[in-house]
Structures are given as structure tokens and as C-alpha cells.
Image (cartoon, rainbow, N blue to C red):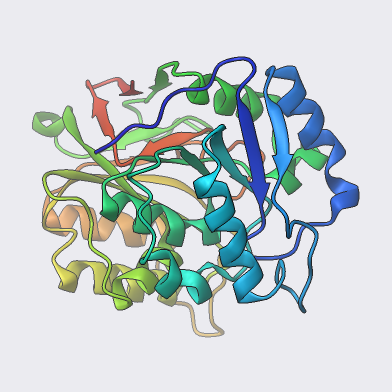
Length: 307
């Protein structure tokens, strides 16, 4: 897996909107954060375009991705927001060689389609906050902003994991004592997008993987159905561990499904005898620390680490 160069002061970065449109009036806070890092923000040519809910036409959005890829001085590509749109670009993205011009591609949620595509080519990417979230700390906390800049500068991720599952507000380990350590390639993102990408023929990197999942605004039976698909595709059997971020705003039917999101994920992990770390601060909440997808992540029994 190719790791892009980490950022230093004076580096150029850009912002694209491959899914929903970007309101340029909401750019100031993100611009300020970029300036604080000593980086130079160059906006993609079509940023601010709008076609219905999208950040421009499919050709405009692909064109911005190609433009960002070909700018040799740009070291990182931030995304404006998620929503829906990246799957529309998939056939064109698969024609591009991202490994030949490595740079960090950053985002989450719908951007999972880009992450999985680039990871499959052999390029590490960064799951992290998007520009529109910088409008409010309730959408992107100071901790999340600091983690994003730290990881783009090459600093280590280090998350404490509680052994006690009753601990509130801290990631905790669920599994056998004999499995209280693991290492694997971190792969995944938004569960709904993983599900969609599997249907489009995507595959995880070869070798042991640590499956990362998070999701928002889904029915509980949808969570079960998507995990059933991962199980029957063989991905869960080839996974050394599962790491779950925020699974929030879940819905149920009038006749209850009978399990919450945590219980659904736990059931699959227990069936496959895979350890689970539940509740890392990543996903659709103010706490959304950056993770490097496609690179190794290690759990030593008490701490989740990524260089």
C-alpha cells in the first residue's frame, strides 16, 4: 500500500465536492483552519457548482477529481460534504491511476466509495471530517480538527480502549481474553457504502483486515441485512477484528426488530469469534477523529494505535 507524503507548511491542498454541493458562503471556517496549518488552499474549478442536490454535473465532478489528481503541487484533496453522489462517478474513477500520483484524499460517509476505490488500487486514504462540518464545533469538534491536522502531518493515532463494557463514552473491547491483541489493514467506512461497493464488485486489500464500520439514519433490519451480505461475501471470515464508530439515529419498525445496532454487530462478531472494539469516536458526530484507511492498525490489549 502506497502512503502519500505527509503535509508540511507551504504545501498546497484543494477542496472538491464529489457528492452534494458546497455553499461557498460556508467556506470561511475551513479556509481559516487550513491557513492555521500553514497550508495553501486552491479551490477546484467547479467548486460551488450545483445541479439539484449535487456539486455539479457528473462530468463537472469527475473533472474536478481529475484536475486535483493532476496538480503536482497539491498534496491533499479535501471533500466538501457527503450525502449522495460518489457512486455516480465510480466507472470514471476506476479508469484513473491514483497510485501514480499519490496524495491524501479525505472525507467520510458517501466518500467511502472513493476510499474503497483508491484502497483497492493500492493507495492509503484518510477517513475524516469534511469542509462543511467546520461551520460549527457541534459538527466538528476541536479534538476532531486537531486529530485531522495531526494525522495529515504524520503523527500517531493512539486511542485508549476500556476493558469494561459498562464504561460510557469510551471505546471498549468485546471478545475473548485470548484475542486481546490484533494487527491488520484498516478497511471500510460507512456500512451502507461498503454494502453498495460490494455490489459494484469492490474487494478489500489482500491479507488480514480490521473492518471499520459506522452509519447513520438506518433501520435496524438494514444493519442486519448489510452485515449478512458482508458475511456471505466472505469478508467477515477474513477479518481479524471489527472496529465500530458511531451508529446513531437508528430506526425501528412498529414491530421491533429485537436488537439494537450494537447487539446486531456483536452477534456477528460472536458467531465468527472475532473481537470487537465498539464506540470509537469516528463517524457522523462532532467527534470524528481521522483514520488512515489501507494501512495497518494495532490493538495491544488496551490501546488502538496507528502510525
